[in-house]
Every structure is written in structure tokens, then in C-alpha cells.
Image (tube, rainbow, N blue to C red; front, side):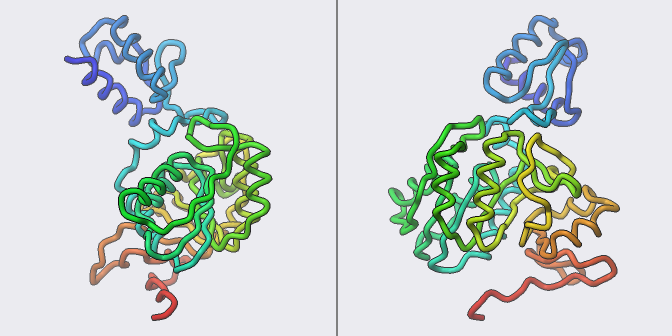
Length: 292
């Protein structure tokens, strides 16, 4: 088995279990423990896992550990694409948008319409690069403002320079990716400076739109950004009903507008963009966009 194949299997085991042991991987892969340690070292160097004593852990296993952009970008691809597509439906011509760092917000940046006269302010290097590519390749008319600062593992810029810049802005919508969301802790980040900047982005916007697949529910990072009640719209995937379980009613009470991305229209189920109704109510249809 090639090293790339072994490392792929290691990441699969890690995604399923959260942590893995060297001895167990050696038996599973039918290789020596030394070979497994070398593979773990290589994956750790690439930011795809965290090497720990006797094995490895997923990079999101600890509240203060910030996963690298590369490690997050390979997860939940279908959900992120669907969430981004639903988020675009909220955008109107001429809007000013604040877009935070994150892999789901990056998916949004990739599909932003380039003919609506949008202004985008972002602290994400990946979002800025995507928007710049759109200008060069497709003639996009999106105006991009980059909030400068110190670079994080998630390819975001944070710190006092970025915070000072965002406080001078007035945005229509803030699209924010989060490390975790929890009924008690609210939305959180493993990075103190990023949490501070994200809070400033919320204050500078009329509405906060959180883009988070269901795996983010129940995760709590080191630093709080805001309570769930600050969220105007949460766009997630259909697994949120299972992830939240009995807490779904409390989640809905805190966030009135919860939208399910990626559902196929059907006679017996909600269409894409359907709202999660309050407990006991029927599914609601997506609201008509302005001008219709």
C-alpha cells in the first residue's frame, strides 16, 4: 500500500472516531508502528491532524486548537456547497457584505454573482483570492475590501488593525462561518482574536447570517463570539434535526429563521430553503424575494 493510500485511510479512521492509536492503525493497515508514526508525522506537518502521545487526534478535538484551512476544506463538501447556494438567495443588488473566514464562507465567495454591484469586506485571504480571480477571469464587478492583520491557521486576518477597520464599516449582511454553535455557549471560535473580530463584524452589520453545517452543533471553542439570539438567519443542512435532538426547540426559539439547504423539492417534504418551523407547526415555504 502506498503512503498516500495509508494516510487517506488514517484520516478516514480519524474522521469517524476523533482519535486513533498507533498500535490499532498498524494492525489495521498491516504495517509497522514506525511506518504509522511516519504517516502521522507527515499528516501533522500538513495540518491535517494533531499528533498526540500514542496516536493522533482530529484538529477540532480541543477547544483552543484552530484547525488549518486545508484540513477543514475536505470535510462536508456537499453540505457546504448547498449552504452557500442557499446563502446567495439572501443577497440583493448593491449590498455591502461582510464575509468572515472559513471554508463555508469560501464556498459562498466562489459563487457570488459578479453582476450585482456588490461590495465585499473580508478578513479571509481565501475569500479575497477567490473574488480577485472572479474579476480577472469573468469580469466580476465585485468591489473587495481586505481587513488586514495577523494571519491565522484558517487563513484569516485578525488583530487590532482588522478590528479597527471593521468598526468604520456599515454592512447590510454579515455572512459568518463558525467553529461551533451551542445553546449555552452560542457561536464560538478557538482563536481569541478571531472571536473578537467576528463580534465586531456582527456589530457593523444589520443582519448576521451564520453558515454552519450540522456537524458544528454542540462544538464549543475557547472564545465566545455571540449568543445564538444574535443570529438573524442560520443556514444549515437537514442533519440539524438529528444533531440538535431535544434541543431543537430551544435552538428555534433563539434563532427564529433556520433554513435547511440542499433539500430537493418534493410533494411530501419541504423545498430547498425551507424554514424549520416551531415545534408542532407545519413546514413553512421559503419567503418570496423582494420584487416578486
